[in-house]
Amino acid sequence: MHNVIEVRDLRREYVTQKGWVRRKKHVVEAVKGITFDVREGEIFGLLGQNGAGKTTTIKILITLLAPTGGTCRVLGHDTMSESKEIRGRINFIFGGELGVYRRLSARDNLRYFANLYRVEPKTAKKQIDEILALVDLSDKADLRVETYSKGMIQRLQIARGLINDPEIILMDEPTVGLDPLGARMLRDVIRRLKSHGKTVLLTTHYMYEADELCDRIAIIHDGQIVALDTPKGLKQSVKGNEAIEITVDRADPAALDRIKALTGVKALTVKECETGEIIHVSYSADTDISGPLLDTLADSRVVSWSRKELTLEDAFIILTGEGE
Amino acid sequence: MNLRVLASTMAVQMKNSFARPGIRMCLLIAPVANTILLYYMFQHSGRADFGMYVVLGAGLTSLWETIIFSSMGDINRERWNGTLCLLFGMPTPYPLILLGKIIGNTVMAFAALVLSYAAAYILFGITLTVNSAWLLIAALLLSGVSFVVVSQFTAYALTLSRKIVIYMNCLNFPIFLLCGFAFPIETLPSWALPLSYALPPTWAVRMLRMCFAPAIDLALYGQYALILLGELALFGLMARLLYRAVDTQVRVHATLEVF
Image (tube, rainbow over the protein chains, first blue to last red):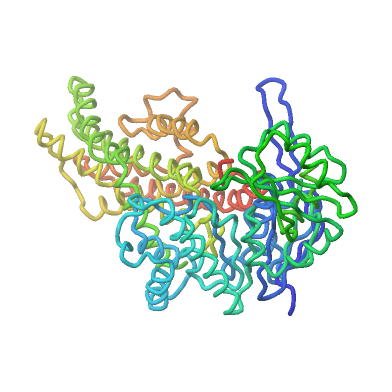
C-alpha cells in the first residue's frame, strides 16, 4: 500500500496582534514539526487533547491553511500550491453543528454541495437518496435544517462529507456531541468506508473510539507527535506498567493528589459509576503501590479493587506525561 | 465556467437571503421608505424631472443596500456558520461561487427598483416615460453587471478580514454619494469627482437617467457605455489579481473561520 498522505516536519504558527498604537505580536505555535504518513485504505487516528494541534493539522491537509514550515502532500500533491488537484478527491467532516445551511432542507444542502463538487445531477440524485438513508435522515430530508436536533445536523454533516465519494475523508472530532446511537452509526460508516478501500484520517480525543476504529494512531501532544503505532503497539509501548481500578463511594480530591504523588504512579483517571467513583491508576510494574494506595484511601469506603489490562487511555496519559 | 454551479449558487443564495428578515426589510420596506424620503426632499427642487431622481435614487440606493448587506454580509455569516471554509475548499473555484452569490442577490435586489417605482406611482402619482425600451434594458443590464463587478472586487477584499461588518457599513454611503444615485455628481466637490468617475455604477446611473430624459443623445449614451465597459474590464482584471493574493493570504492568516 502506498502513502496517500505525507507530512514532513510540518509547522504552523498563529500570529495575533493586540493594541492600537503599540501593537503587540503574540505567536502561538500550534504544530511544531510533525512527520507522519497515512497509507491508502487505512483508518489513521490523530489522538490528542484539545489544543494539541489536531485540527490545525487537518486544516492544512484539507488545503484551508498554509503551513508555516515543512511539507504536506495529499494524493501526491502539495496542499498549498496544488490544492486544485486535491480538493475534488477528498472531503472533510467537522464535529459540531456548523457547516450546513440551516435555512435549506437536508436534500437541498446535499444537492448544492453535490453541484459544487461537480457530481453529475443523475448520479447526485441517486447518491443523495442513498446517503440520506445511510445517515437515517430520509424521512426528514425535506425539512429545513433549522428544525433539526444537534445530532441530526451532525449526521447531515457526515452525509455532506460523503457526497463526492471521496478517496480520502478527513474527520475532525466527528462524534463530539453525538448521541450513542449517532456515534455508533458514524463508526459503522467509517468501517464501511474502509471496506470500500477509502482512507480515513480522524482526530479524536475519545480513546475507545480510536482504539476500536484505527489501524494506526499518532498521539499528538503540544503540537508534537509523541508516539505513532497500532493501538496494540501503543499499549505495548508502555509495557512495564500495570493498572489497578478501585471503586470507592467518594473520591476525595486530596486523596487523589496523594495517589498521584506516590512513587511509581504514572497516570490517574476518575470516572463516575452507579456505586460511586472508579479510580483508575496506572503505575510502574516494578513498584508495589497496593499498600500505600490503600493507606491513602483509608477515609473512603472501597467497594471493589481489581487489576486491569492497560488501556489506550493509560498509554496516552503515560506517553504524553499528562498524569504527572 | 460551470453554469450549473452558478445557477444553483444563485438559487441557494436567493433562498437563503430572502429567508432573512434583514434582507426582506432592505428589499421590501427600504425602497418604499427611501421613495417617501426622497420625494419630500426633492418636491420643491424646481426640477421637472425630480420624479426620475426620486424613483432611480430610491431604487438604486435600496438595490445597493440589498447587495451590500446580502453579498458582503453573507461572507461574515458564512464564516460564523462554518460554511465559508467549505466553499473555499471546494473543487469549484471560490470566485465562481462568490459570483453566483452576488448575481443571485443582484437579480433579487432589482425588485427594489420596481418597488420604488410602484411606491412613487401609488403614493405620489409619479410616472416615468421611457424613450427607448431597448436602451433601458441595456442600461439596466450594465447597471447590474457594474454592481456585480464592484461587489465581487469588494467581497474578495472582505474575505481577508474578520472585521467585515465595519467595512460593510463604510461602503454603503460612499457608493451612494459618489455614484450619484439620487443627484447629479456635478454637485459633489471637485476633489470627489475623480473618485466618482472611477466607479462603474456612476456611468450606469447616467445611462439609466438618459433613458428617462425627453430625448436621448445616442452618441453620449454610447460614450458612457464604452467608459463603463472599459472600467468593468479594469475592475475585472484587478479582481483577478486581488483574488490571487486572497487565495494565499486567507490560508496564511487563517481568516476563513472564527476561532
